[in-house]
Length: 483
Image (cartoon, rainbow, N blue to C red):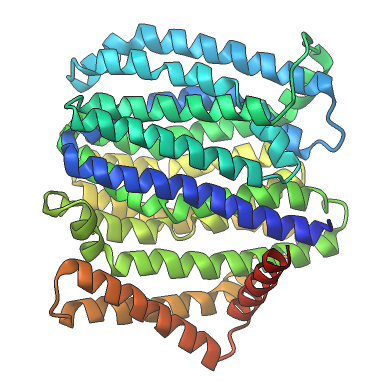
């Protein structure tokens, strides 16, 4: 299979993996949102940052280092595996001990037991990092997709059953723990790699030299991405945090997931081209144009149907989430582009610059925290929109300079996609105002109308990014039919 075929296949299965996983989680989340209250989701949101930070330490950037390294050995894999496992146990113990203080910080006594039980997810996930890394390095996302679907369905059934039986917030805890447990068990069952009793100091030093900078940046990103949960949970209420976390869940269906899909496929693919700058630039440009066309359409489309979507799926009691979601769509539409530019820094081996830019970007997050404390949540999200543009220009300046594809050229390439998606958004939103039907019917009509509008415009003007994606999709469908 050629590199192009591997890339297309990897993107397809990564898309299926991420969206099947997120889609199933989303469906389960919708059902749970109808059974549970915003407060119960808010309680989980309060401790998300502590779990996420611990997971950043456990991984320590070794996954990216292993993916980038061309000739990984059993010594490399085994060394990282045992480091991950020891780190997972260590951070579980730290979280267990810290649980009373976390509960006291938020003035929510119930959090103590929740933190102590949910902390087990750190040990479980530490078993799976190398398994996922090996599959990603092979650009094998088909198996990962199968495992994600099974894990999401199984954990979802458990969570819904517990919610119906009155377990409340514990149904959400069970969902997270069981999903990670199923995923880990299936990865070990289907991926036949086994560690050896090896800890190679030389291998550790080499991989950590690159990965530590990625880890520190990931740690900062995780902290500042989740610090809003801390601030809202501390200075507002669990219910307010519940509204915010539900809106971010809807936003992340496209923004964060698309960023993850594109990033984890293109990183190993582009890493194989790192020595051919001309080829690297050409493929990088194609990826950016195709990615941002999809991103703009999905994010602006989501903003245009936010009201009927939320009311239809999770009910009137979540109405406060609508405006948060609309604003977060604009804040998140550049995430995949930022991620691609950061990926390029890693491909070029500049994890030092990757870290420095991460630190600089965090300074621009601080005003948002202060705004949340002294103004309100909407103003905080407004700053997040501004900050997304600042972060993009910081990331793209250096990565673009390395391969001769600067910010100005990137923006010129993606501006037509934004214009088309923005026109679609205005059309769909306006249609929602005049449609006289119920929210579910309006939602279906708006989505169908938006899709027809988009296809007609792209076909009429022969929009090249759309034509390229359509051609790739048709070729893949034919390939599947032939098989």
